Structure formats: C-alpha cells, structure tokens
Length: 309
Ligand SMILES: Cc1cc2nc3c(=O)[nH]c(=O)nc-3n(C[C@H](O)[C@H](O)[C@H](O)COP(=O)(O)O)c2cc1C
Image (tube, rainbow, N blue to C red; front, side, top):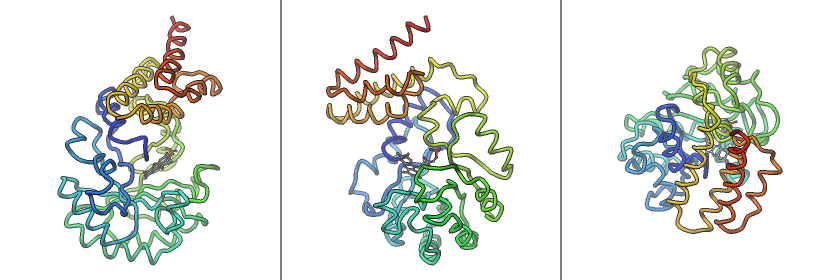
C-alpha cells in the first residue's frame, strides 16, 4: 500500500512479529520510473540491502508499456527477485484515467497485448497479477479470464470491487467465487478482512482460494495476522508496535515535517488499536509541531495504561 506498507513498516512489523506475515507486495513502482535511477525512494523500497530482516517482498509494477515493464522487470531480476506483480487494480482516477491500474480492465485487447509482449521476455521470472472485478462494469473480469488463462501466471489476486467503487460498498463475493472458479491460476482473495472470523469465512466459502491478502486490516489491527495464525495477541503488543513504528519514523525520515506527516498517515488508521473514540483520536491530527504530535499520542497511550492499571 502506497506510503504505508513500505520497507520502514515491513521492517518494523517483522522485528516486532517475526515470521507472522508470509509475504508482502511492495507499493507499486510506476513505469514512468522505468529507469531505476529515477524515483530513488520508490526503488529503494525494494533494494535487497534495505530489505534484510524485513518481510519477504514481491515488487509490484504499475503501467502498461511493455518495453518499460520488461526493462524494470529485468532490473528487478538483477536485484535477485524471481517474481513481479502487475497492478491492474489501482482505482486512483489519475491513474485509471490513463488506462493504467484498474483503468485497463475494460480493455481486454490491451491486457493481452501487454501479456503477449511481457511474459516471453521475463527470462524465467514469474508474473502474478493483482486486479479488481472491472472499472465501471464488475463483469469486465469475465472477458479477461480467458486471456489470463492463456499465460503462465504465478497467481491472480482479486479485490472484488470495481475501480469506480474505490473502497465503497460491499465486496462482491458472488462474482469473486465465479471468477475464482474460472481461473486456472492460484487465486488470492483480497478485501475487507478485518478479523480472524472474516478470514475463516472466506476460506470456508472458497476452499480453492490459495491465500489471502490483507491491506488495511493490518493497520487497523496489527495483531490480526497473529490471530489468523492462532496466537491470542495482547492489546499491549499492538501499542508496542505503534511505539516502535513511531520510533522508526523519527529515526529514519529527514525533516520534522516529513516525520509529522508520516506519523499522522499511520495514526489515521492505527488509532483504532488504542480503543479510543475517533473524535478523541483527532487531537493528534490537529497538532502542528513534532513535539505536539508526539505528546498527543503519548497522552492517549499513557491514559490507556492508567485505565488498564
Ligand atoms: C492508501 C492505500 C494505498 C494502496 N496502495 C496499493 C498499492 O500500491 N498496490 C496495490 O496492489 N494495492 C494498493 N492498495 C490496495 C490494497 O492493496 C487492497 O487491495 C485494498 O486496500 C483492499 O484490501 P483491504 O480491505 O484488505 O484493505 C492501497 C490501498 C490503500 C488504502
């Protein structure tokens, strides 16, 4: 997830909860950055030396220019990666409007053109796909499946919403099931898994699903992957993780403004772990200096500690 599940987060998570998350997909590398000397921060995210001791990662590419795709994939292969993930699910309008991300889903010929040119040139690397049901039309996927089935994909991850839906409305489990049954590749489910019960429900309903990808659920509740794997997960562990993440942000980001912005980005999702109300959590967002931001978080965490004691 852009700006969230980057290497700083993945490192911190692995340090706090070793070997709990099996695999992460990197925030997307956009093909406008086909030349890896550009956009250093994005590429730095998947440099092996920066990922030592972190959650194993599959780099993700966003775009539809076959030449740039192959160029970037080859560079990733040189870095040691054996799989690359193609993002055809991103719902952001500025991206989808250019037939990138989920914006390519209504154009099966375009999808075939990219796969036709990219797959034979991957030199032994495998390709996996992350997608939605469609852009406007949730039935786009059914025109794409015969195409996807023509290529040797490592897996297909489906977030069962359209791009236009962004994150609103319910996941369309009915269509997910139909699509999963028609795909010959391992299918990974993604969407709205917030509890271990949600996870179990998906696996019960779709026994052929090979894996589950969780996005926001891990930020709402960092202990969710532990619970899915059968550990109880004490609330204090989530608070410790939040503190560790803030410490890593303070130690890593260069400027006071960058630190404040990043802490607030995580806080927007992670305040839930404290169990306070959304209104109370906003005090952190209203701060302007780093000292104020840290003090506001600390005040909340300490008051919780007092209540628990
Ligand atoms: C802020 C944000 C950034 C995201 N960035 C990416 C991304 O770079 N690549 C990707 O495949 N999905 C990205 N996603 C989508 C998530 O991977 C996931 O498909 C979506 O959040 C639904 O799953 P969830 O309900 O488990 O969060 C992003 C989502 C959010 C909210």
